[in-house]
Image 1 (spheres, rainbow, N blue to C red):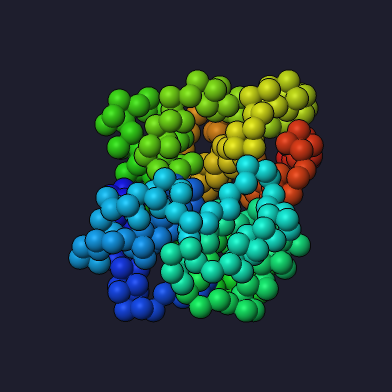
Image 2: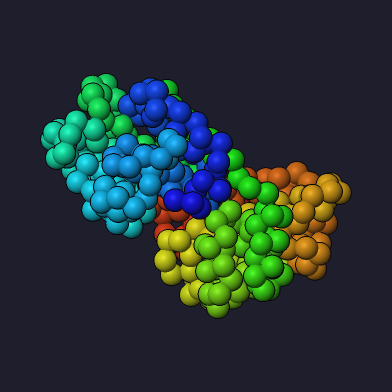
Length: 324
């Protein structure tokens, strides 16, 4: 609980006032980059609603109700966060069935869907029925890193709360202060604002290997080396077996293209990969080609979330990057 109060003090203060005034809305979208505390604030809000010993507008974190929320065992706080690439209609229908029930211990209930950008079109349409017929005392929270991928009708019927991202430099500084490798700290701090999550990345040997593999791919792309296509299957795929690893790999490639763009146009901005030679070589390409390349990487990330296989998505991406 202290973590979210430190990470997003303004939002915590605002929601404390909202709940205290009895003005909580029926639907929210918590939008922001990974590590900005979206799920943590949803959990904090649930504790605030059920806490038996609210202190200065904040949940105590110690009473039985707070402990049940923290452990994920509160009957009136329901989370939907399947491990699959997409959240399907059946997932939402099951949640809606739960919504039709009365609260176990009162009329207040909280529903949270994490990674809502994974909702299929059918699932979003099914969810719309909740927005059309909201139940008194019920609040639904969607967390997402890509709010624009949600249906406009979903966005328009919820209050969108944008989570500011702490400067990567401050996260990097905190990591290096804890003894983290400076090179990996720079990369990890651009992937997540969560210091604990960033530390876990740095301690994972496979993360270092993925960073190295992506930079090798960038070196090949900078030279228009056709063997970059082969490297997808021989190097990247074996290092990115899970969806989080695959998403991370594409994010690493996107950061490389962002660095190259800044280098190309002499933008004075912190660079994820510093003065890595692969980035410097890529930066020699025309600015329009780099911009198109960055957009293509972002599109590949979206395709990956649409049940396209990682190998297929990245092979198509590499062909596009080679063709310019």
